Every structure is written in structure tokens, then in C-alpha cells.
Length: 536
Ligand code: GLN
Image (cartoon, rainbow, N blue to C red; front, side, top):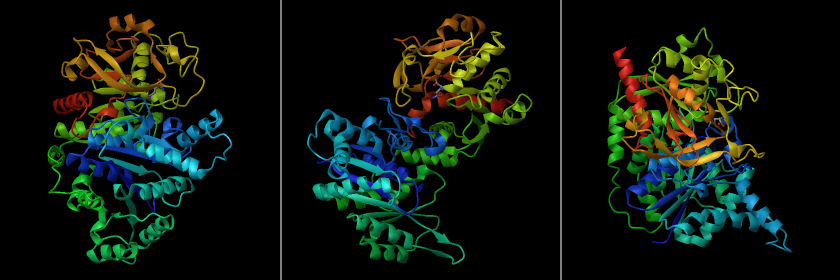
């Protein structure tokens, strides 16, 4: 089968859940046995979101091959279980960079470089790039931003051209919003009509419309939208607010999103895709009524900043038959006199990743509290580094222990900059990124948690590391280095064998937890939080 291209654009407002719709459609096509990939094209100028503050764009997700990407790639992986690559995340910055590099090399000698055709050609090349490396039945491309943004224009022009070149091998889905005016008691379709008109003005006729709504849309209303927008009425799908994003694929399936897309691309669509294990997950999730309170100790008071961690906790909760309620605990507000009050209602805490000094003393206090109160604690990246610093200060007796990220002069730099990072001057894309191997000590807790595997692969995003100069001191004082990179000897995991569950990982396990394959460390952490909570 020739590769088919599905483009998903958004109109009216941002944050309508284009990423979830893309991931859900991917899931449904995958469940029908098609080979798919989902990619995100972001119109902003940054080369990648690696240098963006989470307040700007939420969490920075990292692919196994080491690309810092938009958090939507996390949804794609969690929904489909298929790993994305560096070619699945493209920004305007990346497009321009390659065109400008080619211009400097002299590839276009004599020519004026223009948005059309040079930038649009590069966008088209990138859209098709994944399918030149391996065969895909479907390449789903989500375009970031909202129709009407200045930055989106070249992407939409590229899609228009591709649509023309690919004919029935391409399809446009447009996601819009239908607001409810409480005073009038009415749902309003005008913004949708305007958004589709805007697309049509750019030469793009969407074949399928997905309408985000907080209220059920009547058949008349869907017919009205169909009529005004040149779309079949059965291709006007509603995406009503649901209790969880994981309900979306089944909702899209009930309304036939996958069947309509297949039909529009002249593909036989027999029966219904078998969502099998996905339904089991949903059922288990809905049946789990007991609540487990987990504290997220971090500095970003924003859900999206810790998206993958929150989702990983939720997956592990479901498979342990609990509903995980995550409570954000701002580390900037944690002080010695309130740490007990803030943390004690929790069954366990996650000490979150991060950069820079803001809020780190609070993370250290949280680590100390969890360590001395037998509270399950999971330190991730910076969180692990804070566990290591806390141990140095309060157990090894080095009151000035720190990370050289925070204090360059301390003689007890128990966390230090990695050797290969010392000469790096550019900030973008230069951290230790992507999946690296880690060997687990066989007498460790984590070895059990990983089901007796001795070699694991996990994704990284950091510049600083555990300082091996202090390793023997840690080992003899009771903090064990139980995960080591076999080639670089970097410490990847620390644990306290004397504690019910006190584990810190230099890597980010949250990037690889999926709906059908919850991460073993999150599973084990939640299990111990439940045990602790029920014993107490
Ligand atoms: N700032 C720390 C480092 O660079 C930790 C990074 C993180 O938590 N992702 O090593």
C-alpha cells in the first residue's frame, strides 16, 4: 500500500487537544493493523523546545534517539507504544536552519531564497522524510498552533501543495471549537465556519471536522456545520469533554473517525478495530476507586510541566487498581517548619526534574523528610541529584555539599558537570540526551523492580552527574549506586536498601511509560506507596 498522509490542523483556539486526536487516530489505525507514525510540526522559531521554559510550552519530551521535542510526542508514544524519532518533531527553526545551511554551502547559487518554494519544499521534504527511511501505511502530521497564526502559513501552503500532489493519498482533518453561550443557552458554530473559511481561503478543504465541545451536539447542528463547510455530515465528529484522555480513542471509534478517514482515502474499512487491551485498561481504570495521594515536589505550578510523570503515575495506579491523585507541592514554599505538614498527607513523593537553583533547597528538605520518615520517594534527574546532596549534607556530614550547577566553588561537589560537557558553550541540544544503557546490581531493589533484568535502556536529559569521587563514601554510609552505565561508568541509579522505597534515577523513566506497558519503576513505586499507606 502506498503511504497515505493525514494532516491535522486546529482552528478557533489552542489547547483543544489536537495531540490527543492525532494520537487517538493513530491508535485506531494501528489497531486495524496499519503501520503508522505520528509527527509534529511546530511553527515556532526555536530549533527545538529544549531551551524553552516549561511555562511557555509545557514539558520537554525526549525521544530514545535523543531529540528534545514537543510534549505531544509523549501522547503519541503513550497511546500507540511506538517510539518516535528525531524526524518526528520539526519546527520552523529547523526548517530555516537547513535551508540557510544549504544556501551557505552554495546549493542554491544564483537563486533568491524564498518562502515559496524553498521553505515550503523543505517542509514537504520533512513531512515525507520518515516514509523514505521505512515503509509506513500512514503518516499522521499534526501542525502546531492555530489557523491564522503568521508562523503557520508556510506549513499550510506546503500541505496545500502536497494535497494536490498526493491526491487520494492525502487527507485533511480540522479540529475546531464549538463554544456554548450560557446566557443564550446555545452552542455556536460560527467560529468553526470562519475557521474553515480561512482554511479554504488558503486552498485547503478539510474532509473531516472534529468539533471540540463541552455539550452534546445535535444532529441538526452537525448538519448545519456540514452544510456550511462542504463536509459530509458523517464526517463531522464531536469530541466532547471526557473524564480522561484515554477515553478519546474509543469515543472517536464510536463516531467512526477511522472508518471515515479510510473511506475518504479509498481504503476498504471492514468492521471495527479491536482495541482489546486498551479497553481492559479503561475498565480497570474506571473500577479503581481507592485513592492514593502522591506529592509532586517541583517548582513549576503547571500540570503540563510534569506531563509524562503525571501520566506514568496514572498508568501505574491503574495497574495497581488505585486512582492516583497527584498534588503539586511547590518546592519554593517548602521550609523546615512546614515540610512535615506539606508532605505527611502523601503516600509518597516524586522529586521532580529541573534546572537551576530556584526551589532546590525545598527539594532537599523534601528528600530529607522522606528519607527520615520512611516515606516512599522517587527522585528523577534533578530529583535524584537532590537526594544525593541531602545524603551528603546530613549523613556524610558535608554541610556545604552541592551540585556544581548551583555552587561552582564547593569542595563537596557530589554532583558535578560531566567531563564531556565542560567544553560545551552552546546551550541548545547539547545535553546528554536520549537512551543509554544501564547495568543493574543484582542484589538491588531496582533489579527486582525491573523483573530481574540486568541491562536496561533509559532516556536522559542532563549535564550534571553523580561525582564518582565520592562513590565509596556513599556506599559505606548506605546509599548504594545500583545502576551504572557500562561504558562511561556514570552512576544512573541510587537507592537506600534500608528504606522501604527511596530511589533516585539520573534518567527519565517517565518518557517510556505507555498505557499498555506501564514503567516497572513507577509500578513498583506505586505498589510500595500503597503498602505504606495501608500499613499506616
Ligand atoms: N539540571 C540537572 C542537570 O542538568 C538535572 C536536569 C533534569 O532534571 N532533567 O544535570
